[in-house]
Length: 115
Image 1 (cartoon, one colour):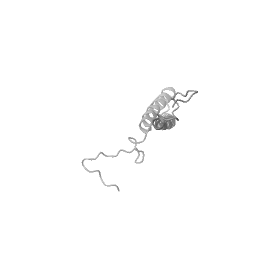
Image 2 (cartoon, rainbow, N blue to C red; image 1 turned 45 degrees about the vertical axis):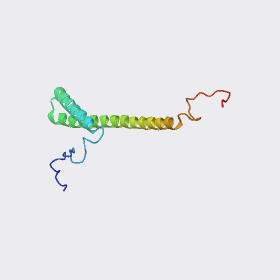
Image 3 (cartoon, helix red, strand yellow; image 1 turned 90 degrees about the vertical axis):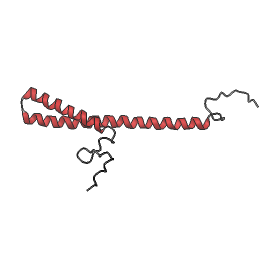
Image 4 (cartoon, one colour; image 1 turned 135 degrees about the vertical axis):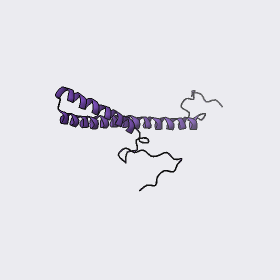
């Protein structure tokens, strides 16, 4: 077992003991939207059919579908953003490295060379 946190340290919060919701990107929003989807799907099904057990099943299915849908959508956008940030960082490094040299793409090149 893990030692209890010391009196000044924040306690780690994990959903179901393994999903660190605070530090995992997209986890919090996915769980919140999934629980909202569960309530909407289950309650909506109950209003139309008045079948309690089936409505609970629909609610659980709604939770799973909405949570996974939000998770994959968010992680895709997160990965795309990280790739764009990496490309921008590399371009800034290149600009700093080549600025003022003959390799600078923004430097005007005339047909005649001036000494």
